Image (cartoon, rainbow, N blue to C red):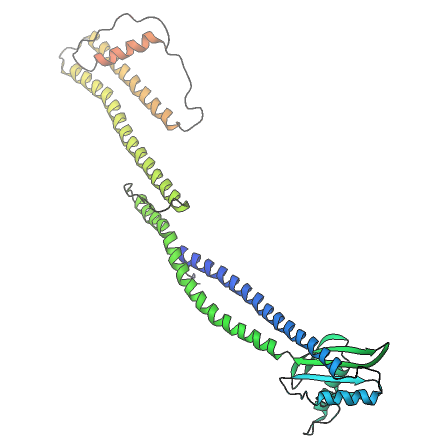
Length: 367
């Protein structure tokens, strides 16, 4: 037999819902800031690359027409002041007729690395060097094994209508990754603390909100046991919970009044039914105490008993009518002959005891 999992109460569900909303919000904020930080750092790198390639083109290459060898020599002198390492920029110039000059010949496959690479490593190095050499004009990203992702900007340098060289500047995108890792660590720490605090506050808020509802549940349990006296009597701002609590109290007031009316109705009905029964029993006892019962006495008692029985029948009929009081066609007008109605009332009052009852002339008509 499978055990049913315990269900969360209202406080738990409210706290979980608030925490879920907060978690989604923090997650969305993290994604936006994570990507925004990466884009901002990348944009800063690209601005620096534009400045570096402009400086390389203006200072590292001759401003007037010269031979390819002179252009390459000028580029080498400029590159000698820009050594390459993991945190600096890669610069190279492909001079038409003089080959490629760079501050890092190993990346471009111009020289072998000091350690003898394996065939697989050499193949990878040649593939990376070819990717750097064949980079399209403009921005591109090339993955280099020892450097990581390299953001590359290439541009053609022209003198007149002739392309004298294609220059390129590359910079590692490691600052982007470092910035994004920093954002991730910050959000992981701050998000965890924020989520824990939010869970605590959400539970407290949920407990405050669900307090009147829990009181309603306890009072409903007491009402189910037959006690109609307790009330919620919610205080505080007139919000939806207070409106619900007041409606619940009003419902209990109406229920208590309805039960009181029911008890009064039952008492009145018992009294009304007891009266004709008392009359019938009294008349029968009077008749039974007589030694010689006259025919006239029997007829008189018969008339009284018949009248009281009819009266009880009317009471029963009235009760049946009240049982259908909630139906749409409960009340409908009906004419009653005034003379027999009043005469019947008078006879009923006379039968209650030895008393004098006078009734004036009854006009003909209907009620």
